[in-house]
Every structure is written in structure tokens, then in C-alpha cells.
Image (cartoon, rainbow, N blue to C red):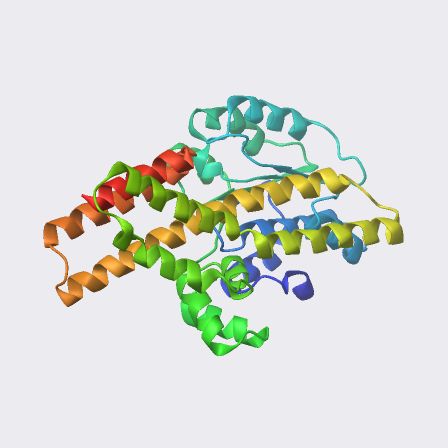
Length: 344
């Protein structure tokens, strides 16, 4: 089974646990790790291994599971800021139904750290699912709402990949040293984010623009609004490389459908995933911008070119904006407010 997990990078301990788990699987698993650590990819591959329990056609199961098209793989993404009660009820109903194709069904639930009040609805299904149903739950962290569910699962931890290891991986993939170093240092331990940044000719320019945006602020609301429009335009422009990747994936989907005659959930599923990835990209771009702002302010503190109280106020405003991203804020209002607070 070692080849099954070859695309999981920077997680050797997790891979060993996944390999062992396939030998004698338990009903529920909880993959815990920060965004970008690769838990979703690992869940798809682990599901492929679970679903390949009898017919010994790993290539097919892996192909369909990786594309999120396998008929016995159900992936549940939160519909709003949190996993809702309605989604929890749907998960319970899905868990009670028989597999469509084989002897097993795998239900992957993402962002379970945002379960809130819906957690108790899932507990019994996770504790005592039908013999054919397996849960793979994904969470950035074990929040207070997730503690009880976590205690019923076999936990597998995924870690942020150190910048040095990310840099090495990118270089091995053919990225030049300078670009690999820049991408790895601002990717927050995410190999997916590092790859996107390494393929993006405009990433360094956006970082520099965020770093220098305070030079445009003079305390006026109109000026802050113009600065906000500028950085929002930068974020809009960041989608190019990912949109190119999405076009390639759509083409590959059509080629697979023609070759294998297996559309599964097909284009609708792929387009839903692409929408999620673009939303995630915008969040990552905001976080990159906030990091650039923070780094510039800390450099000014070191150089003693900024008043200490102003620096504290600015860093606090950046931290507040970063926390607000979890609540799906109005991007324009959030950015305008940040620019106003930075101009005080």
C-alpha cells in the first residue's frame, strides 16, 4: 500500500499511521492539522484504500477517489460559516444507507472544528455506524465543541511543513531557488499554497504592494477606501494561476470520461471543488497580505522608525482582521476598516 500515499508530502508519521490503519480499520478517524497540511488529499487516498477491500483494483479506486467521483465516497463541506444542523442530519441519514457499488462507504466531513451545536447529532452515528460505513473527519484543531467526537475516533495528526522542507520539495519539482525560497517562507507550512505561489509570477509584487500600502494612507476615509480598492484588486488578480490549473483539471476530467466511461459526479463535483479552492485562495491572499503588513511594521520597530504605540495599534488591527476572516466578513468593509485603523 506504500504507493497509495506517495503524493502525501512532509507527513511521514501520518503516512505510517494510515498504512497501519488500512490493515484493521476502525469506524471513525479524525485527521487533525492546519489548513494546507494535506488532510483532504490524505482523506481521499485513505478512502481509496478502504474502498479497495475486495476487488483489488487500487488504480480505479484511487483515480475516482482522488477526483472525488467515487460512488461510495461522500464528501461533506460546510455550507456556511459553520457545519449546520441540517448538514449533520444529512450525514446521519447518509451513514445509515448501504454502499452503492461495493461493501464499504466512506464519509469525509471537512472543517469539523466548526461543528458547534450540531456535534451531538453526529455522535451516535460516529460511535456506532453500520459495519459498512467509515467516517474520516477533518479538523484544523480539536475545538471545545469537538472534544467528545474526537474521543470516539482514532486521531492522526498532520503538521505544518517547515519552510526549509517546503523549499527543498519545490526545488525537487523544478522551481528555481529564489522563487522556492520566497514561496516556502510565506506559505504557512502548506505545500499546496507553496506550489501556487511558486507558479505565480505576481506573488512577489503583491507581497511588496501590501508591505508598502501604508505609505498611501493619510488619515482620510477616501484615501483608505482607495487603498482598500487597490489591495482587493491585487487579490482578484491572484486567481490566474489557480484558474489555469482548474482549466487543466476540467480537460483531464473530460479525457477520463471519454477513456473510462466513468463520469461519476463529474463536472458538477469538480466545479464545486474549484469554487471552494478559489474561496480558500482569497483567504490565503488576505492572510499573506496581513503577514506582509506585519513584517513591515516589525521591521520598522527594529529600525526604530515607528512610534511604539502606533505599531501596537497597527498590529492589533491586523490581528483582528485576520480573526474576522473566519466569519466570512464583507471583504470590502473589512479592508476599508483595516486601512482606516492603519492610518490613525
